[in-house]
Image (cartoon, rainbow, N blue to C red; front, side, top):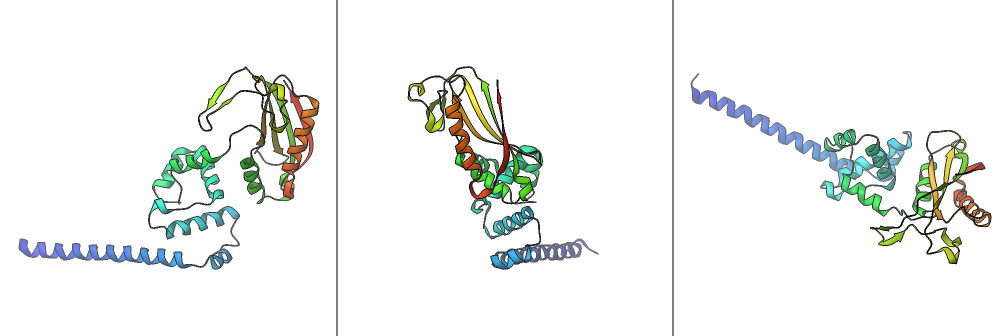
Length: 247
């Protein structure tokens, strides 16, 4: 067998491999298009027996298949929160799953944009209660019962500028119940409201305030009343008693 004939055979073999590769790519493209054409109602019915998180995963995978490139992907809020938790628990594993396209995970820049949207101001941030409502919507009633802990701690006085809002922080901030004469006074105490369920290892801070010395009983009563109303709105949280600790 001369060199020319061997070259001819190798060339034919290479062409077959290239053609097979093209066929596989076309097959994958066709499957993606079929997934993109599945009606949402049909999809919901087919995955109804899966756990809620697996349903969310399937929906985001199919949503990613419809996008022409990664920059066109859109993620649900619930999926972003789960991605944040995965990234916090193991950043290395998160990057491996994202780079290998095992799951449609957003990049770090996308996660940071979602984090920056969260309101970090003092008081009872609406974003926290919206997230808590979303989290507890998948729980049984008995898993939503817990206690509301109220803790007051002493702080060192200090004022800093918030780069996001360009406002000074460190002054007394008790929300709508801040005494007028203390609005421009440096705070030396923090008041924290935290919900802890009877079952489960998770806890959630729901409110944070700054005060000068200890909060008066009159203001504390109003804050407790407001926190109770916010937590029990739509009955997504139930608590039996409160615990107050003061340092």
